[in-house]
Length: 108
Image (cartoon, rainbow, N blue to C red):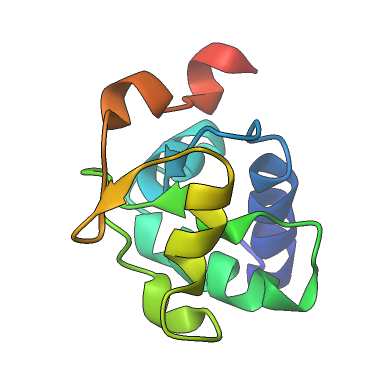
């Protein structure tokens, strides 16, 4: 699988995450038929900062933790972006994660 092509597919899925919802690296990987490639989805999210249309802040780990926050400019930008969409984050953990979780396998 060519990395750049995979990254583009990840970005395309991320662009479909609804406002006020979140998904996980693993959920995107499974949707793309690449289960076990959650880390590569994370790399794609990090590379997405060049494209302002990719809402990378809506992609978190499988437990709702903001594990990618250090890839955002500023101290708390990822959290601030999520909170601006009405998502409550406490100690880097999305609250009510199960309700807010968007699963592309079920919703696309």
